[in-house]
Image (cartoon, rainbow, N blue to C red; front, top):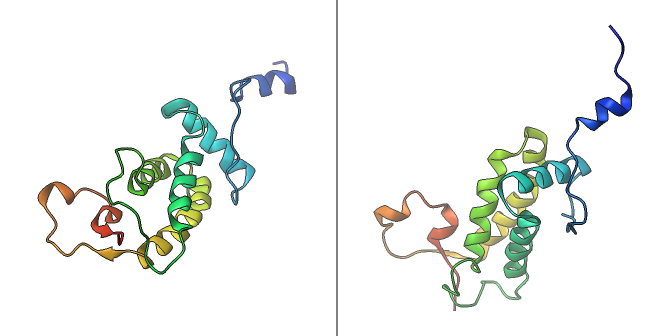
Length: 140
């Protein structure tokens, strides 16, 4: 049986779309970036994870002990929506990429938890399935 040439083997590997500018996620390995990009092309839009991380980080860069700002800006702009996307993406990644990106998300989660307060009212039934970040309040 003839041996397949290396070029033929590489041709079967996944390649990203040409001509699409991709933002780089800082703090993760190249293999994690490839896994994220592959997942984005299959299930999301390009740079979805980068935008979610950037939105989550932007809220945490506010000065002060507690986070400020309106609790309900508009759908898709709140940091909780960004965190929802990250929670949806993490289980779909391979184990090594999940651990690598999860390390960054965990650090951001600890900061978000530290700078918010729990909701003072009881959790409603429709909120039970939501992530813990929806049951935290940012001060106004």
